[in-house]
Amino acid sequence: MPPNEPCPHCGQVILDWHNEWYNAAERAAIYRGQAAMDCPLCRRAVLWFESRAIAAPPANAQLPVYQRSATLAAQWVPVRETTYVNLVAHHPAGQQYGGYWQQSEVQQADQQVTKP
Ligand SMILES: [Zn+2]
Image (cartoon, protein in one colour):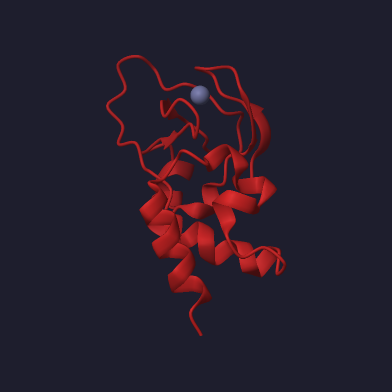
């Protein structure tokens, strides 16, 4: 969520903005318009609050821009898709996030989640 909204900066349609990959406090701030998400492709600040469309912040906005958590993303995948283990490499929802985190971050997150 929210799905299939184009980025106001680079114009790429993002299959899923994955605001659920932020922690609860960050997500709440984003929803209140007090912080911005970043585009997984161009990494520029994007607002999404109160269920309105994805939008670029005003030019003079001084909002914090939060980055999604690789760990939350890795935890999210087995809940939704038990057949996928390695999120960013293999899951369709993660494909646009392939360059979003460092490879080492992704491996660490996957290991944390898949450890018994
Ligand atoms: Zn973009």
